[in-house]
Length: 115
Length: 115
Image 1 (cartoon, chains in turn yellow, cyan):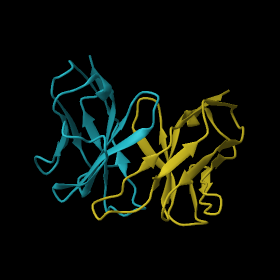
Image 2 (cartoon, chains in turn brown, cyan; image 1 turned 180 degrees about the horizontal axis):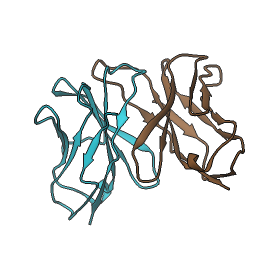
Image 3 (cartoon, one colour; image 1 turned 135 degrees about the vertical axis):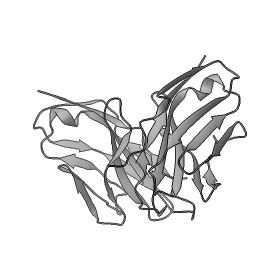
């Protein structure tokens, strides 16, 4: 079945450091890929997405490129801020059934950014 | 900006009791979902709902679970006889078109504690 593997956390960085959170996936078809972020005490928010190979999703300085050849969707940001401290979830949707699209999530990676 | 809301934020119940978790999806969305996250584990899909019926459910969603859209705004998850292992954060989500690349908007979650 479908699965998503994320790097283990927590990840602790200094402000302005470069961030990479690795995400790889297994899917039978051609999935759409997502990064969701969960700030403390809040729900999951979409950060960015890509729906086909070689697409790059970007938002708020974060980027991720859909790499079909390596089945990866790594999240990157050039300079993190304290306000980026959150839990980041990689997810995929393999197909729509006609009644919606089931998301399969990774375990989440906690990011802590310090001054 | 429209958002998904959930009530209550925290529910404590005794094993064997029935609980109903409530969600108000975004008003013009047609596809509705429930997910859960047991502490320290992945976010897991439970069920998707469209056109007043279940469109897909996971193996977790057994006969103890049911969903309902009792009116034009609410979407509920009922657990008929709670077990200790039902303790988790339950997230409601909604989306507009249901395609594989469609964004799901999540509520802040209800933390269910079964004693």
